[in-house]
Length: 635
Image (cartoon, rainbow, N blue to C red):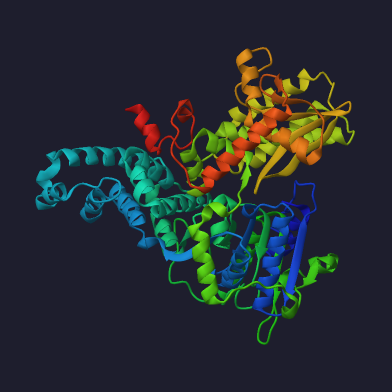
């Protein structure tokens, strides 16, 4: 999070005083960039919508990916005008719909599953499971079971189901609800059926799982029995997400409620419609509440309601990493939100340049269509999704190359996975090295104590989000990063740049990336990428072949040649744990070949070619437990 955003967020949450805020607590930004916090004032909703859409279009034209931006709203209806303006400009959106999760047959099946685990005698829920997407018994088998429930225990299909449910009932005593759902998917043919016959239900599954993970993160309890009431409240008061078109969600501007944004981060966050009676919303007593064992809140009053609204506003603000845009409009009977006019009053005094007026309506190049034209445009764009350009990261390209179905699970269906501890440890080491080499770049003394301090800070930050972290992981990281420091014998390279972002135009598409470190070597550069996995080195022929075929390095080399115009000395994988290095390079012929390869993959993604590609990689794929192709390999 940029420092200016952290400063603004501190101003806001401080207004809650002793109510849910510790006065001595400080919000600190670890980022060096200052960032932007802008308040855009408009004449009316139309002016606001058009101005925001124009700003989004400007950012995309400058190379920003639509998926790195989000419009966060207090309520669904506050985004309607903006969504119309944005889509009229040809920008694809991923937006919350207002469909009730409880209308989803899959979600009702999952609820029945939870109820049976908590109460094996719940026959209504049990019978629903028999005809659910998970088991789908035929009518004759279900009739035999219903006809004489107690005597049907020997029916083969029921024997299999009962055995599975008994295993899962025991698992429910130790595993979280999201883990239980993933396990149910992995032990039944549900995923295969949904992918082939009900893809929209599969999308809902991914979004529901994401919400479960978020709920589990916020709660001190993980057991299904203690969380079930909260899960029911979640379903009563949440909406599912649905794509406005069939284009890959990873290339779409996100429009979602602040509630749904918890746990997410975006380079640019836009918070519109910040006016009285909308945000903060009017106070009204809740018709529902969390169970006592989960709630630590005092009874809701007008004052505590305002504090809750302010906390939610703060959550929305802290989703932004680089850029935060507020917008409001003032017409008769409508005033800007007190969060802007009162809570941030001192902030605006210190940053008067961050206040901007939207152009008058007559001067805004609005491209809104008439309702009939919009329907026609929307229909044609959905019929030809392959015409829309993509914005892809190296990670997405690598994922698709490895297995298109795994790509679909991660980037289209957004099935959540919990990062293993070794991955989080790798992230902490990366962050420590980034800050350490920035000191070297500035000419500061490179002490081991400084490197270890950066690691301890990064590890602490990562441990807040990864419950699997323990002292063993910290000691391992401490040991490895100490050995890495010693291996240089104080002969440190001179970094030209660190964590270098790039956006590479490739045909109609864009490829995004970030290079860990660029070292200056005479009049050339050395591109360095840190690795914390299994060590490779220049000494082994199979490792050299791996480096020569690395898609990651090919993309870096393309960026170096076509964007930065660098003369590359070498491309180096720096293996931290074993202090080994693996070097390679690229020629123009190789780079042209990889460009064609990426363009071909982009076309396949646009055409929604997501067939599984089973192979050795299935062993380490994060989706192997639910993947039908992975299951087929075991039989």
